[in-house]
Image (cartoon, rainbow, N blue to C red):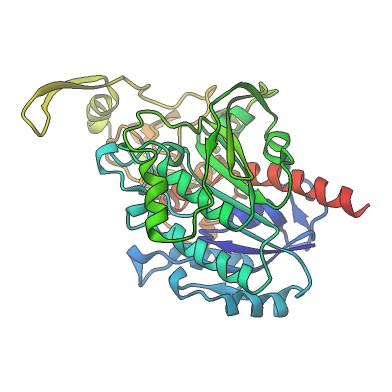
Length: 438
């Protein structure tokens, strides 16, 4: 068994993917089966401590509330990660796991400072308010190593723009993270993946970072069915002494780069990154919106109906644009964006679920859904909270049972991950571990 440290836990996507979903019969069910079949070896991963805190809503910790309603209060810390101490982790392992078990640290550390939802010129990367929280992960890792309890596995998730952030030194943020992990002796695999490329219902692109000790094992390639189609130039990650000045030296090596050298996948081993361009095996019978669509005759959609008077504004928001603008020096240029489909089609996957998904006002990025039959004069609605949950492969009513509004469900699911990807990676690690045991 492996004891798990879950940081930036949100509503528990990592935990669902690693442990499965516990139903009333006390069995743990698999997201990949649609929670109809028990997960393989359900007790192998055991979450001993979780941390979730949203600083922007200090008095209403909604994600933490959902988390504890599903998984209980034991080992849960609803506090700023800066307040989390190594003593908390080791104490929780004694109480909720076993001190001799290996540890695994997981987390989707905040992505707003890398996100495509942030304009490139405003993207602050590791220097941003949320980006700097990487250093809290790094602090805990260093402290665990100093206590002779280095996690055997690390699994982190972030927006894939992390690989090419920031705009004026492409890849320097990711190089800094790799440097930190190298200093701790880890081999690192990373892979950018669009969930729809795996046959899942949402076009959600994220980078997954998996670290462990020893020679490269190809765990992510096996888990995600990745094929390497070309290689990039090797990137050296120096073993400088861990100081602020040396971190700056690494970052300066990327100054002026217009493209990131890290491509969309790669492996760090003994100070060298071997980047590659990857493609995914074509999924059999990929999911589309119709597979997760609610039955509008049995679910209440009255609060998510879109006014017909706003449809023209929706068309404008999603239409193509060419606008003349001025650079800071006064030079004119044309800013443009392409047209998007006005509404979500049944035979297509969803675009990325965003944190403002639950709003009713016209938006380029929100989903507009045609009603099966007009209702009270309305022709369209936004996504139902159940559809948002299903898009991320969460169990039905995982958040809705907490009397949360569609707008808040949108915020939670916009910050969540696609659980099935975590389960795929989990199964690849499980196979490696159980084969060792046997």
